[in-house]
Image (cartoon, rainbow, N blue to C red; front, top):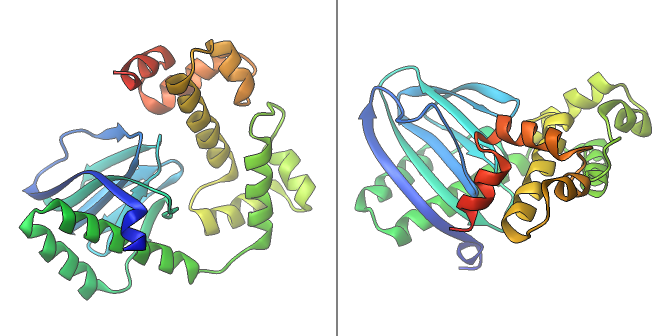
Length: 242
């Protein structure tokens, strides 16, 4: 019950086989989960990309863009949720396929309480998989640094790697192995998430928000924001307050 209280389902869909997704990409304010029940699809979340088939679960973090394209006729489960947990972004392979099949069977009852249970169980399985993966203290140090210094425009991969005593390419490789994305992409997504929060919760100008999120100008923040989310900052502010 404690874990159920830490996840709130915002919407879900168990879709029958279809030739293609309705949209080639979308962005969400919540966590998003997408998995094929049968068939396969190509995906991209940040710098993570590949092909998902049965047994794979693709997670997109809040504010991220999930690109998807079916390779074959595919049935799938899609869910949006908020949580205090931290699911691994990108694709994760489920080890217990029988448990996954059982969860998908439960969804046929189409009850929200059951769907919440299924999504919670999936997230916990993914987190256990990640917990069983090699840990890297250096990556932990990199995450701590980025989370503390994201508002500083001069933060760079070269500077971070030098502070940690390794090359930028080594840092990117080790960071991706643990987090499923690169330090550069992680920093960009973190800054954009903070920008979204300020756009939705304050009346600060875009220039002020840029200064608080690591961008040297409101113009550059607007360019990055629009390219990554498909919305301008002003559009996002307007729709987030409806």
